[in-house]
Length: 191
Image (cartoon, rainbow, N blue to C red; front, side):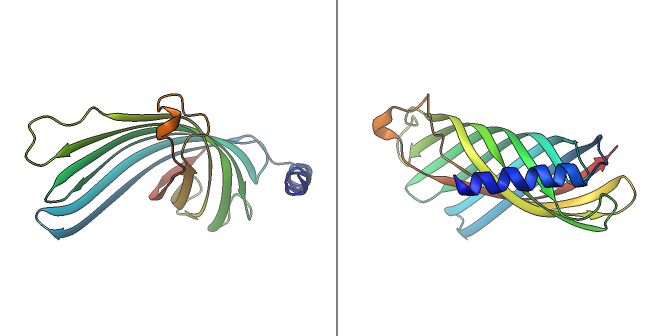
């Protein structure tokens, strides 16, 4: 509880000390990863994210994000495919003025996560029924923005979210605690 009180106090101080407010940041980013052991043993993943943030002070914002992703892991004995969609709402705290060339940030919030996993055993004509997980999950992350012009920046960041706290799709007996993370690169526009 003490950590929460400190966070609220810091938020109020930042809000009072930064009277500049009222700008929007629109972002787009992508993530791709591939790992190959052999032609029969490999994994790939990709995701795309769009975000819209409103800065109510120069250093504090609320950001809504939408991510859609896919991953595939293949071995000689099976193929696993995962599809996921994440709707996030985060509080963002940036360090440095709006026009700083290098501007790091931290973010924390929550996300609605929908994940569908499909498993196909080699040698069987039909895949197993998909396993679906969905619900609200805590999320956190950080990164930095590198300003290219007054309104255009490159944004690099990392995020992590847990398995849904209140999974409404997966039976309780099958629920486990997992963490998903992503590393992103993209562009953002401020106006």
